[in-house]
Amino acid sequence: MATDHCGMTDKLETKPDRVSTKGRMLTRSRKTVDRRLIDCIAFRGLISQADLDAAAEEALLSDIELETILLERYRLPKTELGAVLSEYYQCPFVPYHERTIIDPELLRDLSYDYLRKNAWVPLRREGMVVQVLMSDPHDVGKGFDIRRAFSGCTIRPSVGLRCDIEQFLCAAIRQRKGGSIEKILSELLNEVDGEVARDHAVREIDENDSAIVRLASQIIAEADRLGASDVHIEPYSDRKETAVRFRVDGTCFTYMRIPPAYRRAIVSRFKIMANLDIAERRKPQDGKIRYKLSKEHEIELRVATLPTSGANEDVVMRLLTTKDTMPLEAMDFSPAVLETIKALAERPHGIFLCVGPTGSGKTTTLHAVLKRINTDERKIWTAEDPVEITQEGLRQVQVHPKIGFTFATAMRAFLRADPDVIMIGEMRDKETADIAIEASLTGHLVMSTLHTNSAVETVTRLLDMGCDSFNFADAMLGVLAQRLCKRICEQCKEAYHPTRQEYDELVQGYGARYWDTLGIAYTDDWTLYRGRGCEACNKTGLKGRVPIHELLVGSEEIKNLTQSKVRTAKILSVAMQEGMRTLVQDGIHKVLRGVTTYRQVRAVAMK
Image (tube, rainbow, N blue to C red; front, side, top):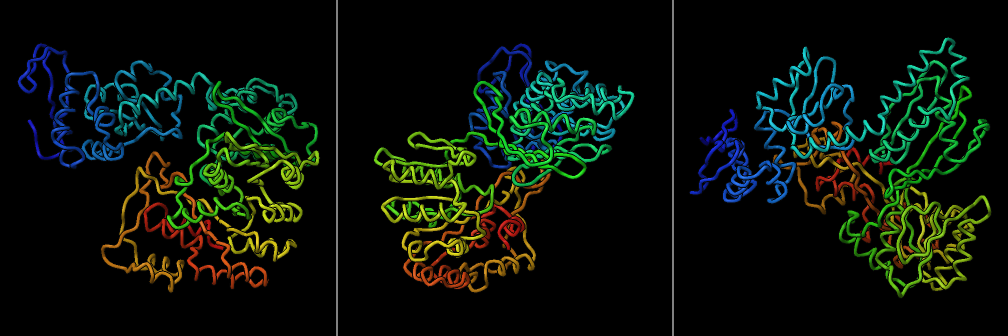
């Protein structure tokens, strides 16, 4: 009963006794495959008709869904299959995403076994509207059960894969066993409501209270689960709730709020975990927390406390998860820059710098370079604060400025330890910079990071610090500046025809004289890309980050200009004539490729 259009449900099914499949009679319990859905997939041309027929036959004869077979055996992309399901069922497709948190109240009266067996799960409630994720929104029986479970509510259906629904349920079960943040906050609110006097409650609440201990642990676990780089605990006055904010993909958002009576208890709890003095509230303190999420997964948090108005303290924690070293090829370098960096890394001596603001991926990039040259023939020493990425074959040292073991001290020690390559976490002062330059001139390859805005500005910054211009010019191999832009979400990326104004902005940002070399004119069929916004990216259209780069190579002309201490603009002009792409230009190339947007490039690269 095939048809050429996507619409009403039409089933192919086995009978309880026998069914003919390509000439064979099979005894099988009742099982159905939606013929019209098959036609929709065929119409899209995502898979050959022969493979589609084979997948449908396998689905009839097994307990596996057609969608699962197409995903796992025939490698059909989830986004493409999701688009077909969305079109066919006329409702949004929602894939599993770890940031989606299901309200425990929605699941309170529902059996997890029942939900798993029937492949549906409530996702969220907005007033009297409940969004429900289903594997088959056309199933009348499931629809009746859902309306009965949420009597009086409007049901907003969404379609999802059975494997994704299973993941949502597993996450909900883990959340229930671990104690959800909502449940802990409910306990705290009940405790506060039970106190007769508010001031008395504030004095009695203790940082060792079981609910406070569980809340602190859950905040760390949630931050790690959502991929947050930083956690901000922000207490306010007595009558205002304490805000807990996460930074994910470079952007802060308020994750939760804690009752005001607990503002000091939660701050003290984190200070205890970081071995800080809880009695000292008038000056900043720094510490570290080692937190074991599971037997296999341990994270480290760098903790900083700062006194704020109203006799409060803010806590800022940076998550330092142990990461594997990325290869250079996976870091979105342009082909020319990638080949140049590989060539510079093979040089026997000189200095290579990676520059940018905090959190721009400088250390990750340097470790990728070290991974390429990390062989038995080379002795590599690194001094870092802290050691975030580990590599076998590297001898990595953690500096401790409080006891006088600084980067400069580590550099002097390295020079007595027979190094071939030295990596310094950061050039924080003239002393460290001078020793690094001296080491690079005496036959060692030195790598380090610096906090500057661009590759060219790094040259003038080091000279302004008092470094010898002739020595630095002789030692300089290259300076790589980088930033991290938000990436367009792959789940909801779409092409569109930009306005003339958008085109002119790109031309102006790239530079009109350089834009002409690209040969891109504004035409009626010229397209850029953007994210529509979906569940996977929290309706932002952006998910993940992509680096943009600017590589200044120490050519003879650049070295001469450095020795002459000329202005930054002159060095920039010569570097661009030699083929250097600025951060904005590299970002625009990624805009044209559909990786990010010009707005994101401007946000991180424009001065």
